[in-house]
Amino acid sequence: MMIGFSQVLTCPFCGTKKDVMSLMSGNNIGAQLWSDNKEDAPMCPETSWVQKCPHCGKYYFRSRQKFVHSDSTMSCDCGELSLLEAKEALEQLTKEGFENNSEEVMIRLLLFQTYNDEYFRYEDKPKTIPAKEDHALFVECGLWLIDHYVEDVVLKAEYYREIGEKEKAKSILEAIEMGDDFHTGFAKKIMERIDKDDTHVFLVY
Image (cartoon, rainbow, N blue to C red):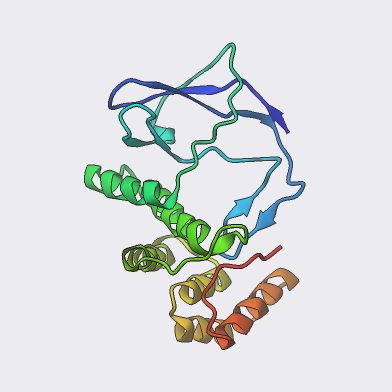
């Protein structure tokens, strides 16, 4: 991995500058793929689609902002958001309106995955029972993503499993013919967890 000169973003609300990471090159060594389709790639980290201004605290889509490259700083800040920040961003950006479907996909997928980050993904974090409000948003975003984003039928079944719709997940898996080893193995792991009434995200590889 080679880190390049930072991208300097400008907050559209208050004009504050923010340096975020820019990669010259990366690779998938040590990458992990999770069942909610999040990839942790330590040698190819991704800068968050949604950024939080360090001054005014508002959120904006990185793709909407023009940027310049810093000529002196090399930033490793990806601007990753916590679950609390993802909730705030979803509320603010929904009120402001989306320019296209991809923007809504970005923020709802971000909330879906940060929920798993907060409660289930990492073993070194203390396990807590999800707050009812958080779970309700997780389910809402999961259903929206199933209808507007997820095309792969096995991943669709996994999203149903994670939001607690295990019968829908099971019926999808029982109705499809597996075409390759990856999907067959993924579907088997999902079915095993359905049988155990387990809704937690898991490591695929």
